[in-house]
Image (tube, rainbow, N blue to C red; front, side, top):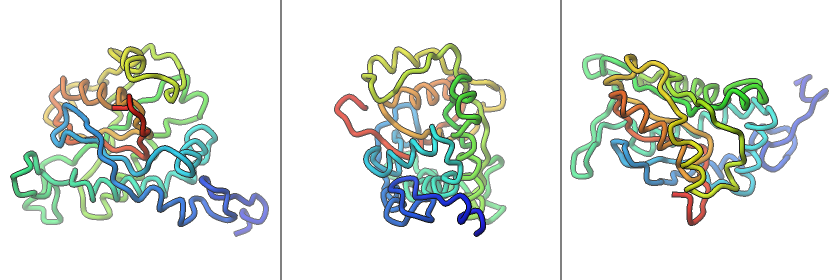
Length: 239
């Protein structure tokens, strides 16, 4: 492409020429890392990668340096993890036979689609980045899932209030819980009542943001199946 000649790019994870996310770095996101997520039907959040090395570099390039071309490969990994994890099945108990939440048959299709709820960004973060990055990748993830016959839509039901910017990687679980607690609210309580939802975020560090989103949605009557993330930090206090 002419653009590649004028403005060549490298892989977001390793800088391999002429790649958005090279095959090797894409493989780094081909995992299903389960983390406890209280308050959800499955009790789990699922991440595509460990937040280290090339995966970390790729996410930071996308999240903080405007590499919007990563929306597509990241959305594909999130969609794959969602389908592989079982979150697209109505399997509320381990001893119960899994049955699809959605089906290509209209007879078995639920009355309303599953809702992907992107984790909120602060107004300052959106101003700095120029967009709500999680909403963008959630929209693309939903489109990919719909291509697989799964009825999914995106609703930006969670937002932050009075959250100061601070690096999440340097905070303990207790600090992050204190920072987030009470600062995530549901924008349309009536709309999310009795809806089936999945929270989608970029990185699970302590899990505080996801837990607060899950709690806020559940308090308004949503049925939160589980949560999805691109990557999970592996550390002793990250639960």
